[in-house]
Amino acid sequence: MIVLVKINHPRYTFHPPQGLLYIADSLRKSGYDVKIFHINPNEVTDSVIAEIVGLKPLYVGCSVFTGEMMRSYARLCREIKSSSQIPIVWGNAHPSMLPEDCLKEDYIDFVVIGEGEITSVELADSLQKGTPQLKDIRGLGFTDDSGNIIINPRRPFIQNLDDYKPAWDLINIEKYLTGFHESKKALPVSTSRGCPFDCGFCYNREFNKCQWRAHSADYIVSMVTELQEKYPIDGIITTDDNFFVNKKRAFEIVEKLGLPYYCETRANYFDENFADDLHRTKGRGILLGLESGSERILKFINKKITVQDSINAVSVVSKYPNIWISGSFIVAFPTETEEECKETMSLIVHLLDIKKEMSFTLGYFLPYPGSNLYHIAIEKGFVPPKRTEDWEDIDRWASKSQITWVNWISSEKTVKLRKSIILLSSTYHSPSRGIFKNYVKRKILSLDVDGWGISVLICIFIDQRFHIIQVYQIIKGLVNRIVH
Ligand code: B12
Ligand code: SF4
Image 1: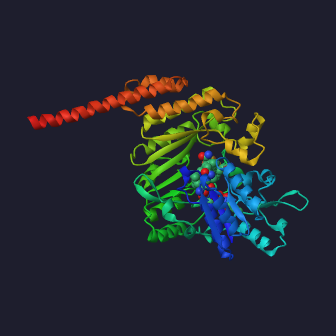
Image 2 (image 1 turned 90 degrees about the vertical axis):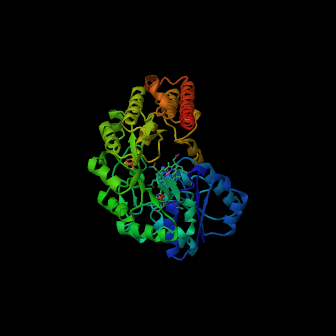
């Protein structure tokens, strides 16, 4: 028996632990029983720990990203260690980037770097034998008998992804079907891995070596169709890094499935034909990594798009009201100036003027280990946390007072940016915005957001007045019709 654990923040539970489902498939093919614990941090309880320990697994494998949940993983693993000898294995992005740091923790015995399907089986086989030949297992990190940390060479990527299929039967799929746009029960599904680009802030360079690998269109279509026979799936949410690397394959999948879909991709792919194909094939949710409104920053982060690409992408999609589009922006890149932050705000305002229903997110730059900008951030004074679990503080959605890792731009300015964005999203679309649009715009673009709360309140107040006036007019109209 092997236990695999994914701890998710409660707001995210609708995403199935796909990485673990792939590993489970591989382990089961090699004859191992697998149990998956997909839990929230508040479910790291004595009884769950006792249940895991009671199963006497060959090892407990944890799937860990950098950031949120790391303290919960640390707590879980320490507790397991305190009451048993069960080996603990960490896999996924964080241990793949910082394997040595992880192995310094007394609650982590092994790390798996990169894809886990084969390494997890070879480790299980080796532990099962009792005389493990760990140094021959590619993609594995461990501490030898003399206490030296050994990181074996990386394993080549899986040649044919279609050889593996997520072990969907190990989870309650219905729990993960989620609504977006017109879909009520969309299934998150990974159709490809990696991305050929090399953006400076992204995990892709180190984790995927910028190599894109994909399932065939037929494989994805038949997997989803099979699941549809049992579950009321009415849409798909692709969790690929970049769904449209191969447009022919991607469109073949969505055309054959005929389901509304959500995906993440790049602004420079867009022209009129592409937007039309998206619409025709039921592309209903598109997330674009637009990152910045500053040409210098876009070059600096090696995004390989221009500001005009972003404007163009939103313009061509704006003709299709039922394509929901969202832009993901980042502030406080190393070397970014206040002026460049303002350029990002200007771009957001401009895009909203083109497509007012567009949504966007604005996160702080995070120095993800393994990314190119991680090293530049360190040169600029970023001090990586010493303890693995303290990476939890480096969180994109951290509370305002905790942007401790950004010291190349004033924390105060960065916080103001986030406030501006709140102001923007709260007021930019409101009817009252028309009344003092220039005021709102000026405040946003100058990052002079002191008193932003008052601006929001004024908007809400005016909106409610609008609302009351509208309701009053409808009632008056009805009364008039009845009376006359
Ligand atoms: C879907 C998704 C989510 C979902 C949940 C995912 C889930 N349940 O697994 C949600 C929305 C919850 C989410 C949230 C976050 N995410 Co996210 N997410 C993704 C995304 C888009 C797809 C993940 C996926 O399913 N991949 C497909 C599977 C097949 O691959 P895999 O997970 O990598 O698994 C393989 C290997 O990693 C390895 N492996 C994985 N786990 C284990 C465990 C063991 C024991 C072993 C041996 C091997 C192993 O083997 C697997 C098969 O080969 C990835 C990007 C990507 N395309 O991978 C980002 C990504 C993983 N997320 C990321 C981040 C940072 C986060 C957040 C921390 C962001 C934040 N602060 O908002 C949060 C926190 C999550 C949490 N713990 O609560 C980063 C991780 C970077 C890093 N350095 O850690 C990524 C890479 C995105 C990015 N480009 O930056 N995420
Ligand atoms: S395009 Fe997206 S997935 Fe690809 S390297 Fe850039 S940020 Fe990462």
